[in-house]
Image 1 (cartoon, each protein chain N blue to C red):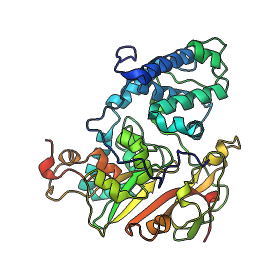
Image 2 (image 1 turned 135 degrees about the horizontal axis):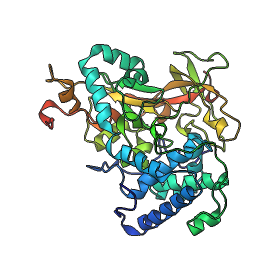
Image 3 (image 1 turned 90 degrees about the vertical axis):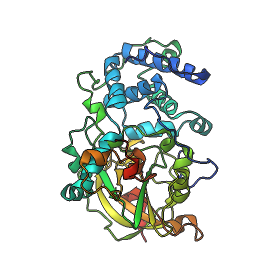
Image 4 (image 1 turned 90 degrees about the horizontal axis):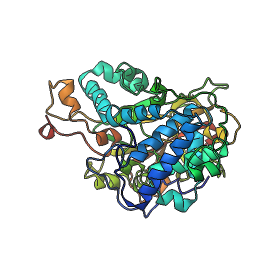
Length: 208
Length: 218
């Protein structure tokens, strides 16, 4: 879909931005620095193919296959390479495992670093000042904003993505899912559970 | 630089408010900005650190008040202007007025896979790693006026090296034009009470990814 096809923008700032961004693209295309057709394809890939469903497949496989889980925790970039994702996984992807004793959360306090290849583009809240400021100093409070209450003794480990390493949380497999296929398991894995601000769906919350 | 982008531990921004059924982009121009940033980074005129640095240098009131993709657009404009790829007159006119400046390469529609794959930042080490897992280290009390990836909230505090992440491009050097100057990168874990005081949640541990020049033995 071309950017000329639809105008969802409302309000003066957005309209101004639509014009400003279109002007910039025109200049860059006229000068031969970029090809608008390439931009179309990049946007389309993020809108349709690169998203948390990729990470959910990875988590489901780790739940179902202990050998894969071992390799994932050892070197997530390498382990995930075999999935052949649209957005090939960069170096230095690290999977961190939730256990009954430890809950992991991911943040980027300095900007908005996020494992795009496996989770797609970050949601607005992840990039927002409230999350970036509080995730490191008050992670339990942030979890409360998400309706998550962990046992008081659970260690909360926050990973601030301050370099080009990227993190994905491997949540705990929900009870009552013994014998489930990877496909059914993947349906329980939400984006936020892989960021660490939510727990996976319980079997009774499955959508399929 | 000690800018408003360095938000860890700041107060007053309120609750985190997730949006249900959030679209990938909230307006079509957001996707164009993302794609333009990808395509222009592909030309090799600047790298990811320089994109971040350009956003951090926006006036603080601008940084805090504009949306995420508007911030990207403003940073992109600054990098284009700074390298002479576009002129202020062109931005004003909305069309090309000056001849293009040669760039190393441009991204064709036939190969966008490069735009969808994260760049590689690991580099061969030029010296042995100074620290090992288990070492106690202090984050240096440094305040560079230029781009750095050492957040303020850990500076001066003692943590423990948990992992060695290899040798990586050093953002602090790249943005000053000093080249990649690869440095060892470590995951360093801090106790929440050391960072936020003894009355803070005792179950919290926070790690940062710290380049070797950020650290000293403790």
